Image (spheres, rainbow, N blue to C red):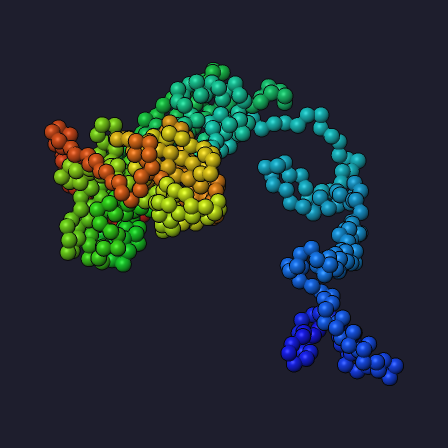
Length: 507
């Protein structure tokens, strides 16, 4: 506890115990020898009972400190409590009488064959029936679930596999793909010949499509199918309004479905920034709309997106298919710009292209791309149209996807947590190909983005290329005729456009 200095002893580090220092300072009457006190004092200054194990490694003092530390650790482990489970009393197993008593208080769904609840005990006046009568018919309703199939839904309702196969053959439709989830099936099962046989299918009615209903009935022991066509009005639905405080709120109040509003905003954002819209601007959207004579409605995709700006250029965008590709065109016939290298993930650049010190390997080497910091699981988008050349594990890149584009250009996306693309797949600009992660040699969630030209990496920020679709001739004439036809539609009434299910129905 003392350190030597020019002026004698002063209090310092842990070099001796307190009792030893007290003995030197206050010797008793039996220890008044000056030589003894001096030797004890010098020994106290030289001995370190608790040395720093980071200093003088291998010396006698260091080994003495190591032994002290080992003894303390061993004592702590020896005196530590165990991890054995604490015994506790458990409830005794119920016998048959107690189990029946508890079961009588429970509630069981009827669909699972409920027979719970208290019942009156049988007396001598009750005799068991040799045979119980069955209902001559059973009428029930079922639905096609998500990921369900037509055959599975029929089997779940009690239809035999033989009858289900005949129904699928009579309808002539691929029911696994044609029937949408939620399609209602009205089924009637008849009387069976014995209890070991399934009930025969007497009738089946369902809506195969908006414009088609199918009735299956049993006539003279054989199933027959009847197709019932339903008239459908395909007039698109037009919705207009003022932007006000929010395009989304205003369009929803006017009766536009959420999916159409999202498509409208994405389309308009290709021309101007959404933040540049003013409350006085007027939006104009037309969506595909089908209304059957039975009152059922299907709302499809956005067909037209227009914007009349109070203090700027108006926007007219029409979805058009040319050359097997569907995209948005301006009123002049100019289509989307394709091939523009867009940012592959929503995030900020944390490391640029060039030489740098690797954060894990700790030596300087070429950083052949740029890094985007983004939250774990954020979607990674294709920078432009292309074909997936590679998708899988790739050394230090971890989960890696490489896209091949035209003109010797390719892009790479590394360190992803999950890949959403397969080799040979054609992807479009903005399509999700994976999700941000930290696989491979990575210190945290981010996207490593590379750009290749003729097989060699280049700075991604130094390359940009653009191709624009342009209509001409007959395609341009047909495009303008379609645009004029849509813009001549009247606006659907808001009262008609918002039914209880929230889908637009006006025409």
